[in-house]
Image (cartoon, rainbow, N blue to C red; front, top):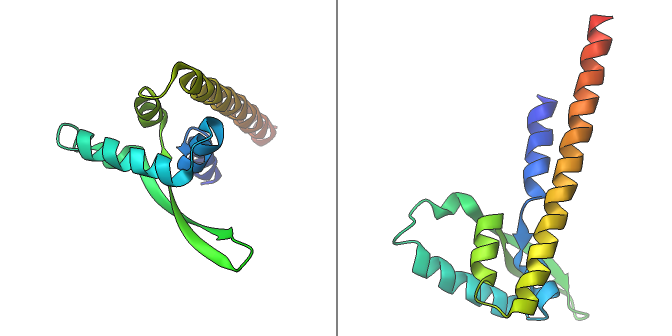
Length: 126
């Protein structure tokens, strides 16, 4: 049962949010969200199963005058690269580097989980 939760944790490392993309590209989250909506509108007729590759998430932002509820997207690697392929080469490379960093972190986490699982199996045997 714990391994399922850990696998779910691993999956979350392979998504990029529209906030992440905005931070990397210097664009506003609103502009990134607009670009994502336009991309999804264009893709959905040809790729009706896209719903499993992204989700919309609400988050709170402190504005200094109170808390504002905002929306961001979480995109998988495929949609992240699709979105940013229309950006400048410099911005694309920032995104590609970040995706590679996330994949490296994910692989490291998987290795640690496997090692911990193997250790638990050894303990069970003895």
